[in-house]
Structures are given as structure tokens and as C-alpha cells.
Image (cartoon, rainbow, N blue to C red; front, side):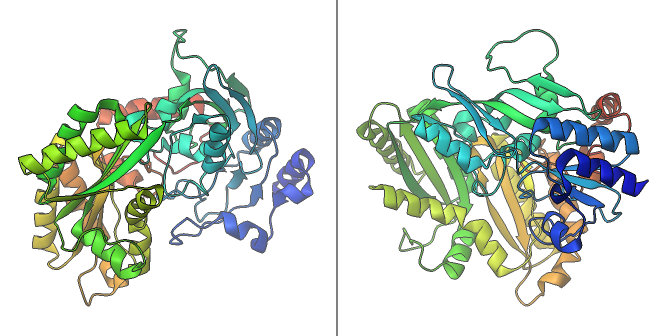
Length: 469
């Protein structure tokens, strides 16, 4: 039976596109952080949507579970198979073409395997902007971004990936093709099926293409790093920036002093904007459709007011593209510095923006009481309420020994998130890593509705089993 299935897959895609040898399949089986390696009966490499559909039909007929895969940059074990070896991986990396750019409708139609940076570059070549931006943009695929509803640094201005998507093409669990590649801003003809698949992590079908929104390129953007005494001050500055800059405020990132000290220790060549240290820092970006002078004027006016009101203690405004890039590197190197320092316990959470300062103070205190000396690496997209609240070991404690406390630390952090009306997953998804946590914190009615949708669309349960539900 197994050989019949693999023979069918080879007939569909060609023998060279059906990988079964361990040295060929290995790159597709380990998660991004290298903490888990699954098994698969094969890795399938279709070249277009019709091949995807035929392969899914074969899987449905043989009851073979499917793990859809893009760039494999996720952090919650959503795109790798489990240890059973029952599933096949269907990689979308060969579906990597830009299909159309419509400069009047301001849309770009792309296949799911396109690298995010490839889409950004295609938009730029057309004189437009695709604003989704995140650290893995040189490796992640748009199919994965859609399947996890990725966020990134520009959510404050442009929204999550769901907000940037107008239409989808999806292969259903039965191997049928839903062609929803419509570039419409308004379409009131029934259920918003698109929104079911965005954020579903491949559990309801396989996204094979998408129509995405494009925006005008800003005439200029300017960046500043602002130092302050506390997260409360950071929230005050955020409100002030929004009042002064409106939609021109495109990014507002929070970083603790410990984050920048960590970056400085592992990347000493990066800039050190301030002579002294401060408890918190906000990285701001203001863009303008008018001119550089307009962007700089807005930013400097807001910062001047912040200094006068005591919201900010000091500030550095970039005066060149190179300086701006240097300030952004401080933020972008925080995860790299964490990786260089060793293993830590990561949390991707979101909270009502107004309650972030309370959450940080309360959760820091609980962790200090239960794990004295542990180090909190807290940074994130303050403008949209998304924190990366990571916990590193105490001095002198091995990372492996500290990871034994993961369940207890997760309970403290996630219980605190729930107490402050937040979410345990802001932009990375649930995958297999947070599946049990979801049961604890998700309302039972919500879970029942999610299971009903899953059962209706994937009655055989073959789409990315063990993920989310």
C-alpha cells in the first residue's frame, strides 16, 4: 500500500520530486531552532497548484496525513511532521513565481512559495510598497506568513498579514482547487472564506497563491531611539506620537536595557547611541508621503514635547539611512543575541496596549519570586500590543537545567497574560508547541466552533494533524 502511494506521487510530480532518502529529507524535518526533528514517509515537491491538488487527492485516498511547508521559519513546530513517520511533507518552495503586479489596483498576485523579500523587491520595482517586514523576510515564504497571520514591525500602520490579503487560491483537503484570487476591496457575497485559511496553519487546506495589497512608497522615513525610565513612560510616548504623527507613525518598538546590553555583549560592532544606560528604549519610525523634512519635523516635534513632559530622558534621531539602519540593527539583533547567549524560554504574547506596563511589572515580580535571578528579555511591537517576553537562566545555571522549568515558567507567564485579557500567541501561531496551552486558555465555545470548522472542511483529519487542535 505504501509503495502504491509513493508510485502515485512519482507519477504526479516525477521521481526526483519525491524524496524518501534520509539525506534528502533531513532539511525538511527539523524545526527552525533545531530543537525537534520529526519523521516523514516522503517529502513532496510539487511545481504548481495542479500538482498540489493531485498529491492531496492521493493523500486523501490513501489516508496519508499532510504537513504543508514553506520556509520552515516558524517557532511553534507548525511546519514539521511529528515523530510517527506517517505524514508526508508537501513543500511549496517551487511555487515561487510573481504572477502579476497591478499598479492601478495596487495589488500583487504571487505563488505561496515566494520568499517575502522577493515580493518586497517586486513591489519596489513597480514603485510601490509591500509593507510586511520581519526578521526572517529573506527566508520565510508568503504561504507561511499567511498561514500564521504573521505580524512584523509595520503592523501599527499596515496591519497583520490578514489585513494585507485580498484573495487566496487554496487546495482543499479533498484535492479541489478554490480559486479566490480576486483583488476586490469589497465583496459581500457570503462567508469570508479567505479569513478561515489565513492563520489556520495549514490545518484546513493548502494556500497556493494570494492577491496582496500594495501601498505607495513613502517619500521619506526617519528613525529615532528614545530612552525612558519605564514601560509606563513608553506608553505615554506612544500616545503622544500617535497624536502628533497620526498614521505617519509606522513602527514603535520597545526594548529593555537588558536587551541592548545583550546585543552589545554579542555584537560589539553595533552602535551605542547613549553614553549612559536607561531602563527602557523605544525605536520609532515616522514615514511621510510628502518629504523628508516633513517626516523629520513630525518626529522632532513629538520628541521635543516628550522631553519637556518628562516622558523621555534622551533621544537620538538618525540623520542618514546608514544611521537609521544601525538603530534598526539593535532591535533586529536581539533574537540573534539571545541565540548566541544560549537557550531560553520564549513567549509571543499580545495584550491590550494600555495594560502592558502592568503586565510587565506583575510578571517580572512573579518570575523573580519563583526563579530568583532569572533574566527577562522583553521586547516587541508596543504599538500593536505584541511582546516577546522571553526568560533566560540565572547566572551560573546551565541552559539545559533551566529548560526543565519551562512548564512552570510558561504557566506563570501565560496565566498572567490571561489575567490581563491577553493572548498567548500574537504572531507566531499555535502549531504543536502551544496546542495544550490553547486548551487551557481558549474559551470552550470558541474551541468547539474551531473543531466544527475543522471537521467540516477536513473530515478525514489529514491536514497538518496535531497542530492547533
